[in-house]
Image 1 (cartoon, one colour):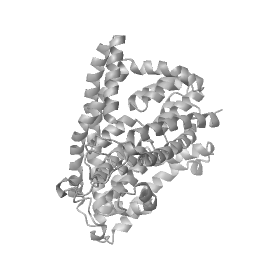
Image 2 (image 1 turned 120 degrees about the vertical axis):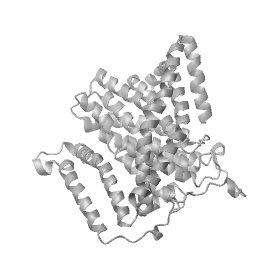
Image 3 (image 1 turned 45 degrees about the vertical axis):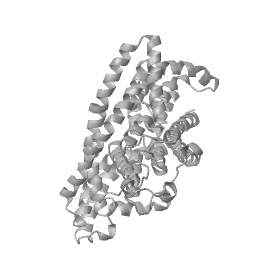
Image 4 (image 1 turned 60 degrees about the vertical axis):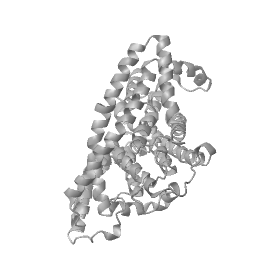
Amino acid sequence: MLNLIWLGLLLFGVLVAGITGQFAAINQGALNAAKSAVMDVALPLCGAMTLWLGMVRLAEKSGLIQHIARFIRPVLARLFADVPPDHPAMGSIVMNMAANMLGVSNAATPLGLRAMSQLNELNTKQGVATNAMCTFLAINTSSIQLVPSTAINILAINGSKNPTGIVGSTLIATFFATLSAILTVKFLQRLGPFRWERQTGIPAATTAQPSPQSSENPADVLPMAPWAPWAQAAVFLFFLALFIPNAFPYWFRGAAPVGFLGAIATFFNALSPLAIPFLLTFFPLYAAGRSIPVYSEFIEGAKEGFAITVRIVPYLVGMLVAIAVFRDSGALNLLQGLLNPLLNWFQFPSDLLPMVLIRPLSGSGSTAVLTDLVKQLGPDNILSYTAATIYGSAETTFYVVAVYFGSVGVTKTRHAIPAGLFADFVGVIASVLACRLLFR
């Protein structure tokens, strides 16, 4: 699937460039995309990867991830039936989902890559995505988010009177997108072309072996030091004291909350900036309470960050260059023109089509489209709210595929891309309907 999509983007882009005379544009666009893949994506991601994989190492060594995973083990066991309930991947998946919900993307991606690496330890067909990998990627492409902070900021900067109004529409759209992603990926994995055939009699040398740190047994972790619970409670109370005044300002300043959705947005906007400092403090403190040598273990985990980043660079360059060729050749505009009559027949607003087409391809491109649309139509126009909802309830699917699968060398993605794109489609439809319901 990925091979056909990549080749199609390149061939169709070059064909359209030949017709429109845009070869100069795609020459420059391809080179800029290759440079951007390394300098603007891979290198910044390397720093985040190094930091968060070091923190995850501490959480694994101390047994914290395993404890976290136990809370939602029944749900995860049904979603990821092929993964042992006590496998470290379960904890990493939980943390990735939590970071996505809070809108902390710079932590969510490294945690997601860590989870994908751990899922690959169970893979008996290296280079081929397992059912669990496809499910995890589909959930990530459906973009579980409680507060779409970037979209809210774009509306607020342009003077919207109710920028947090899209919280409700995004929750509705995200719910249906995530539900459709899960149902679709589970349905497709049973179909003949995508069915996972179990291999038997695999030589031991070809079977993925769990890494030493992934097989860490929480039962072997030393007991908690006497001082640790008190220190952890102090840290928790400290962050709680910082959180409550910002999450519930009307308790202290007497101002009534601006509606129920406004109160929800205020709550999570107060939580998001504190999430990373809390994790950076709590993980090392918890590990220290278990007598883990925190700095040396952090360094050991951080070493993986650079290695993973190097592995994904070719995948990023290949995908971003193909997208740039398709976009800069004019093929994207041509596709928009071809789809406009069909969308008009379905009474779908044609102004939203650029967002719908670009969102799965480019995060920065969809941000620019949203900003331009808000400036043209006004920040409180229903189409601006709808575009912001689409932005918050969908993900850059092809970027996620390139990064997540590239980090473990998967080239045969099976049904992951169809499930992710269908979730994007459902998210768009749900966004339009939710905004017509809430902003009419």
